[in-house]
Length: 103
Image 1 (cartoon, rainbow, N blue to C red):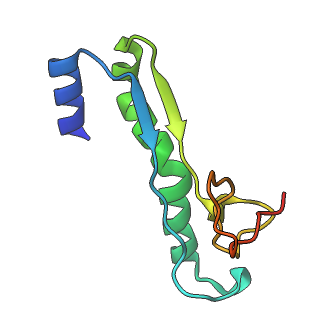
Image 2: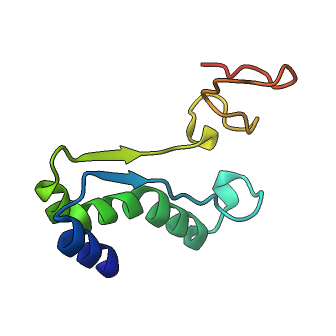
């Protein structure tokens, strides 16, 4: 992140768009009540706190940007209603064999 700060600040004067698109899924197929705490902690650190940490670190550059935006991406696994099919929540072209997501 230090290199990003140097390049964006020195070469471009700021940052206009930050796209957070990182995420992991807890290891193993154990039910939630049986997953070990270290796995849960690593998952939450990456998925919830990671984007916040990056936004905080790059906020000085975003403030220098012309019309700065933060975009947080998610996947179908981030859905609250159907996170087991693997289907994306929104798709412009969905194969006929892929079921429509339920909302």
